[in-house]
Length: 198
Image (cartoon, rainbow, N blue to C red; front, side, top):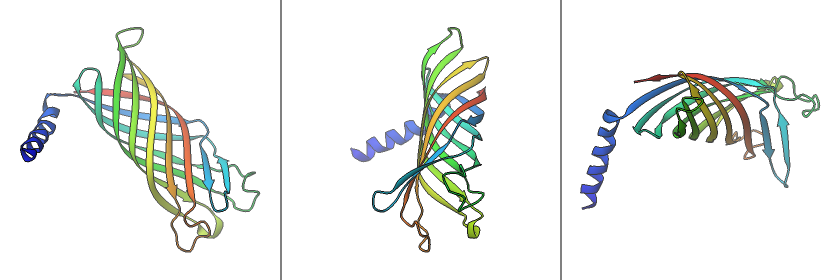
């Protein structure tokens, strides 16, 4: 019985996209003021500000029902400099950015009002955080959980979104002074994009 149910679920999952409305969104974003919170030994915690940054991304949704899109997506967040004052001049040219790959949902809240559509965005997946510094060629990438949540509007296939996102990661280099320290990167982005429907 369990095998039969699993086979039925798999068949529905494979056939459903054939009956779904597909949507492909391309977006570019402006990230207002990213921050990174560093947590280490002995209850050490410090938050660093970064300069504003930019992002590009794409999402592919399947609308099996009119009011809910489910899909996958990705975004690339360009490196931005850390606030030099927090680093007390000890380390120069410190930058960080990330690449995120995620599953995404797009519940539609309203349609055909002042705008064509008002919707929510939810994202959950993996982020690859990139960190670079002039200090002794201190460069690395670390994987960790990524999530994002936001609100968007659509008018004549033009999208505008406000998105809050978080990357979690740890530095795991055996030779690093901060091995095992945890980091949380928070961003607020304004995205503008275009929707292609199929």
